[in-house]
Image (tube, rainbow, N blue to C red; front, side, top):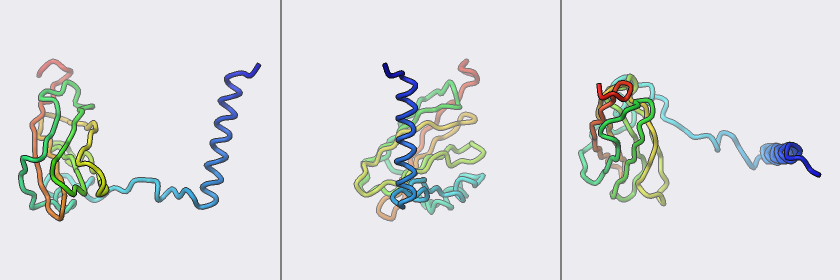
Length: 156
């Protein structure tokens, strides 16, 4: 009779061995697998500076960008949002929270075959505008939605 612990150990050992061989052979490179991120933009303290660091300072308002977020977020630590757009050729979608200490909350670089859609959870310190920035075809577009953050879910 084979114990479940033994199976888990063997499965883990085989997985580790295969990954080690792949890394050793150069088939799996950690610097390619890990995501790149705009460190400069994430470190900015103001919305204008973060937009400038992303190259999106002259963004135009667009009705083609839809932000789905709760009107009232009872827990500012976990605010689910969805950004979708019908603009073609989307290259990047960024999410900013105006009154956060560091406004850039998320940045997604999409391939040309991707649909203009992202879904994530962000952290909000207080009631603020959530701003979606879409870069497509060398142009930048924005949309915003105000999300009220309550204290402890009591509506304060």
